[in-house]
Length: 348
Ligand code: NAP
Ligand code: ZN
Ligand code: ZN
Image (cartoon, rainbow, N blue to C red):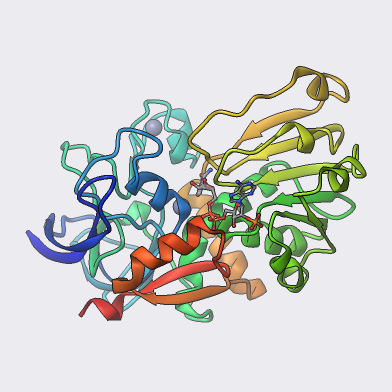
């Protein structure tokens, strides 16, 4: 077994603390990565605090992982020791069903997507994520990372990046379209950058007056403060597409009403409680409400390559792992600009 060291949650109330554990030996198709940076996603916090239910403890969170390959198994083709590499939200799936074969392993038809942490590998053992010094992963789920970009700022692309890139691509967002981004956090700021890069006219919706200037700098053409309902009412029927990245319960109907005829509102934010949806705003205008989960391995690689080509990265604030609990408190207060990334050098 390989010795690992990281930070874990022992239960849903306690702060995260130092944790020693073991990972499997490097198998023939495995890659051992020395982790250099790991992004801090709101999903980490939801799961650490068991807000979605079913959390497995001890839990080592973290699914925005980048680092350097330390060792590869005998049959590994894509990587060699010394390469940069990334791991996102998944480490395995059935690989045989239609969704897996079509490169959408996150929607495995057999429900066998193995998540990077808070999940169970095929042998039943718990998976441990990236708030740690290393990870062992089958090369089929390891991404190639360009040396052109700032590595710490690449880490959040592995979840916040792909989770926003995928629905924008799936629904064909581009020039001539008006797009709304709801919530300016980790996912929101990436949605803003991608929608802007794809040529859309982008409106950022935020509850935080202090984020207006940043939203413009990040690519918004317009910023709307959502605490005043009149600001939303003025925009009825305006948008082709709205992506909602909000992590807490909020009213969806006001946003659905802002869609044009045939417009799509897509939820990527995952609040712990269900939201009431009125039928009439959907019926009138044939609008649709959908959801989207991360993105498959193939599309994640496409997104990373696109970012390397267009020089797109996350806006990050580096934190030592010892301050992870303070980072969580700031995330709950919507005070993240715009993604915390753990500098794993602090572990040593
Ligand atoms: P984050 O950085 O904390 O950003 C969330 C943003 O939502 C906040 O910055 C805030 O933006 C807004 N917000 C928070 N509470 C609000 C409230 N009560 N009413 C209105 N707006 C509020 O979180 P994140 O890491 O981007 O994650 C966002 C959500 O996406 C989480 O629920 C996460 O679990 C989920 N997620 C889903 C997937 C997927 O595959 N679908 C993948 C990753 C994450 P403003 O200050 O601008 O209002
Ligand atoms: Zn995430
Ligand atoms: Zn499958």
